[in-house]
Length: 454
Image (cartoon, rainbow, N blue to C red; front, side, top):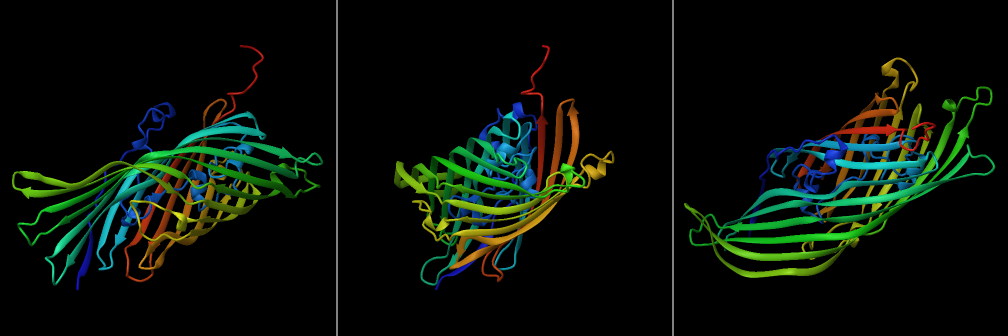
């Protein structure tokens, strides 16, 4: 019988700190717009699928379907673009620290920091229609762990699994808001759509060594996946004013109800796969390639990605308070790939988040801060030994408003998130992660302002 012992080969990766100026970030290579701390579970599927929400939503437990804002971009539901009132630029970065506990109770720590998102929204008609474009990471592959196998009939050997690479998404979209002819303050309906292009490279690698046999060669199996494909998501939002004080007709006291939904079409990734197997010999002078028993290049393959659906409800007034809940569901059981044959399950998540602003017009700065918090719980798409992993997190964030120029408002959003993924027992790796997100939001009212004099 073979005895399997797991261990990790992790360490702090090179930090790639964000370049905050938009003109510089646009010129950066896509390799800087991604990244995630090393995770053994990123070997499943196409890696760790990144969240599509920005800094404000992250602090509200990533509640996105019903979230609409006059100053923040919500790319996860493009219908929200129609509520923007100014040209908006958003830049985001995150730093992750992950503690990984193995089934043998060993503890490893890894971390990474990277630019998370970049988006620009133009608002030709405030609170009516807008267009948006941006760059987001889609998924990351970043793992490195070892499996020692002791077999009574065969010589003991070691499997080293490693993965690297990222997929990115360039997107563009727009939205339009329809108002009721009877009372436009009560009933508003928004429709939006995003079209994106997913591209990138992923590398899956397995190295087999025989430490107890000096004559056995090391085998190196490599699969390089070059992927590209189109995806789209459609968003809907319906907003109705449910409370209005007739005795004190101040719009700041109004309460609104927003119902939102979004659907992502399954991505059809057209991939080119290079597979090769080489045998190596480790000598004191270096590594020598003995031969390449097999190799295949330019193998065409189409990977069917899952569809994702989100729906939710939110009540409140963005000027003072918001409370929302949404549910996310993704059909990962439909995922098919030549380089990954393991089992995946449909994932789901329920999230609750809120935002409070004491008084956005107060002279006291502390009263103008935005406090956000939330929590979610669900099941990951990863299946380990026929058991689906748990996934949950709690978030807390602050929004710091300030003004850079005469017609420009700026918000710095800071979010702390603590989460856990794994099983309740010690049958599998258990991850506890700490994620810190920083987002800069610039709102400029001068882009489409009609000037009387030039």
